[in-house]
Length: 185
Image (cartoon, rainbow, N blue to C red):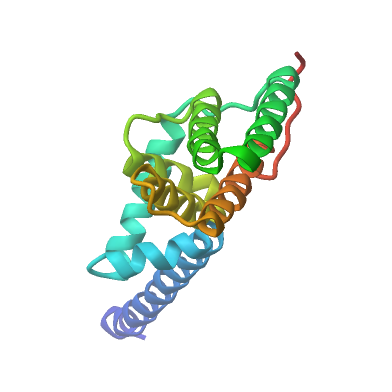
């Protein structure tokens, strides 16, 4: 067989193999991002110009997140946060709006102590999405209700719902995203 004939066979086969490998890589990456981010994946895709742009955004979030010093809490700090949450829940009975504001502050404080930047709400969402994508909608909903309550426009049922939503993220953050690692006090 001549060299030309051999190249005519080998090059197309190599191109097909490379295309299959690239397709498989993209499929696995897409699946991995979807599994990792949960509902946040679809939200990001809906808000982006394309699926590829959304996946680039999510990858950029991961890179930023990797540079953060996210850490588990020592047991004594974890216990203090649990007590503080119980106090906020008890406060709800007499002062529901204040309790929701305090829940927001407590969640923000917990984020900060875990190592998340807390200066900018939109950036908080992006940073949290990497490890807490499945509870992020809870945070969004609670935050919207908290904003309503600042102007006394939230119903008692909405305020109760905000507490439930804050609790979901609070528990997720307190348990280190479901990966509880105990740090000695």
